[in-house]
Image 1: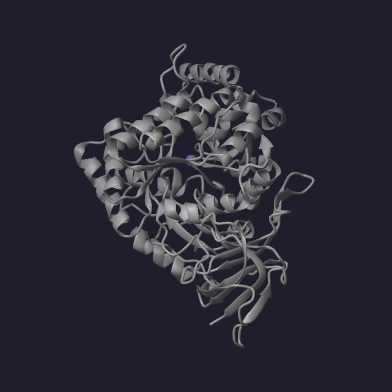
Image 2: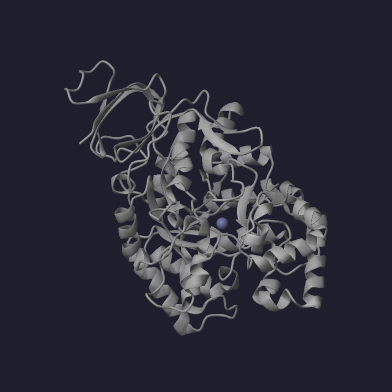
Length: 544
Ligand SMILES: [Zn+2]
């Protein structure tokens, strides 16, 4: 059993308590002692680690991740290492309605479940239930810990594919039973992806039933909202009506209030420069709801861009019969007009979309280009390029979308007491990568330092002890005797995300060490991540 004695560090223990001088003794997978500097030296057989006056923090918890689609799969480890290098020791997966469990042994929609945004993770979904997924992680090894929601999108797909009509009572029961089984086996809650198929088709009754189920187990309901911009295809267009993303927030506050569920609003963003002016009004809705006793919080990034699939910009009516509409002149005309309107009204359109992975072999050379650049290369319109991309990738091309917020909004969200910090990123095997794979949490610490947003111990608390408390993660998130030895050593004076001169993300500055369940995974001695064989990987599946 490895024993580490972390000395000469300053402790930010994850509770928000002020930083103090302390040494930390780790034995096996646990923190066994926190010592004042003056106390006696531990016995022999202990590896002394000089923390060089850096901060000893709990390992970071990424509250909104998709690494569950990567963990334990063949060849996926290099794609997980960047997250470890940014100090993350625990990732909360199963977000946006997509989980790696929650489907029965046999059902006709297997391909729909695997061919999604996170296909670069190579998940085969060859296991059964939450238990099966936990065994998959234990058996094949993961560099960091994973916990996961059960995805509404996944369970609904297993019951009836991407059919847009309402569920029958029998189908609703089947779906809830699948979710309940996952919750009993340790899923941390339920996630909804209301802007994706099939979550986009769920009606009020269905959403309430799902929320009540999460509330029954006192677990979190994480929601990718129906809209993230003033105008969106998921709500009917009404002149001078309430902006759609505000309607989406109001709907979810109402859902939480009615069902008593603990609601985590996923990735609060304001798509398009013209949505930005409503940020203050939106954040105020969260504050007022909390004041009334509604348990609602939100996730935020360190960047003003986000990853998604190309389908997300298509309106609900178009998605409802995607294949037919792609060949229907009238439907295409209507779509063209709506996207044009979106550009004018939102300040968001083709020019904000960068295709990170076209998801079709014949367009591989265009990975990393903006939609407009691909159109120029093909000498055709941007609209036609969009339609071709949707058709060729069956809507699954990965994109990075820009102008999700501005620095002022980002700062306000980071400083907000109801926010938690996320990466919401995954690495692609080809094409360009999202800067958030290496940089999301370091960048938040940097922004907080440079703009005086939060005391560093509070910023650390939100990404460690605060996140653990929010999700009910046992024994993690705090540097405390008896707790699991997930530790990140940070130089808070230099911490920063980094990129090369061509804009590709690089490992961040200022993450000195990362320890997962007592195992050293990032260390200055090796100047990089340590990559032990699969059976020696320290990550675990965490049941809630
Ligand atoms: Zn999402």
